[in-house]
Image 1: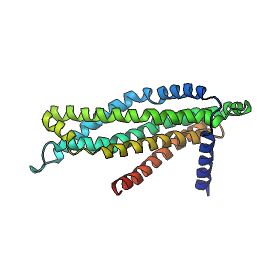
Image 2: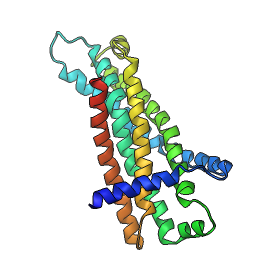
Image 3: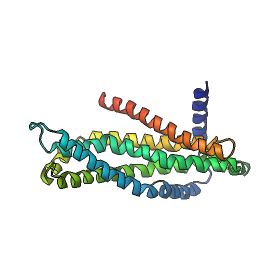
Image 4: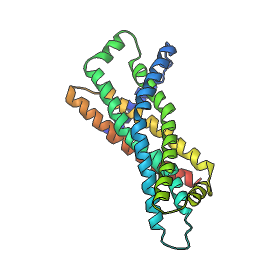
Length: 247
């Protein structure tokens, strides 16, 4: 019954998180701070991974298409589809689950074991809403922009590697990334991104908020946050992909 206990406690925590705040201006300041901590600090790693990811996809696609019946613009087409549909929405969010999720769980967990959360509650502050809501809101706001940047840099990385390696010409690559574009797929991708961003922050906050013990338990909560966030991202990705392609 432990999984059902945790699921029930998670939803009870989320109900407490999304209660109407008493002073929303204070929350706005915290959301701005969390946007910088979650989004701006992740720009470097997201950019580097996206460029290399796009380059690898382009090169592998080029050398996999050995049939003369397959046009060379398929390299650009494959790079675009891979970055837009799966790599940027899913892989980048899995990386953020490790970076952002562990940080959130350890931060809130440390506040729990040092009794800072208890002090907030004694002062009559909704500690769950004050600590968790700005993180969830900031992630839902800024993560789609990170993924958008990842998509762009991945396609640029594919262009640079594809053209410089002689796998395709600039014209063929650009034609490929424009060919057969369906806007609905982009909407589907960002729907997944918003769900994944909410999952990472809320699940990580849950494990941090209910940390009990000392420093060892904070580390364990951080590990659980990354593991369960990653599993849920893959589970939701499978479910949403099936629903999107069978509607």
